[in-house]
Length: 334
Image (cartoon, rainbow, N blue to C red; front, side, top):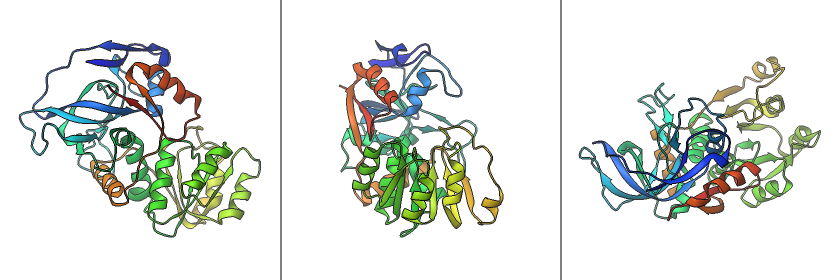
């Protein structure tokens, strides 16, 4: 099979498109012919060595959808020829509240989806929603389950609540917007791009502000009032503004910190509001299944910015690095 492999770090230029053999199938595994895969910022970080537990070489790619080619002898309920979507979270464990220590994500150290074929445990294989194309299905898993868990499992969003999503340019943030709007929340966003704010409004956001403006938090407070729920993947100095924007009894769910640690956090602003700050990462198999149910119920479709071929994996990663995309970047496997 053809695959996008990383043998050494140094950025997207180090990715090699090569022919590799397909390993033998274990009894509990499924061999899938990949139709489409999708990029996550994780893939870009891995090429630079900026990810925990680096182990090379590996085939990149956490997200994918395709057709079942072969199943192990112990696999039941999955038929050859089925159109499927892959849950990229391996070995979550029995406790829905948190992942066990053995948890890892497909695509490093385990070989991933940027290839013509991928082998995964049968427990990570789900029926592809009928209304989604392979490109759309491939775009959903990692960012989608992260958003679902943050918004519903941890954030407990309710219809009519005011929800703030900082940094609407990210893949997770866009899924947060789509899901929150679908259940009747009043969503506001921030971004450094007026174009992305406008596109978010077209997709159902009530409004938004440019966080590069000096008084963005005050402007946003005048626009939306206080937020019942803030789902943040940014962190950094701006997190203190999020605390100020949270309503009494409200909550912040944090799934990342792309802007680094939070300096000078004033604790009384937290406890006098009786607010909650919750952490989350990825999602359990139950979260993944519930996410697919939500997408089928409301016939939601992931947003796709651009597609590349497998041979263009380097270019796709470099395009992601530019940060101009609004929607997922998909690799279509021929």
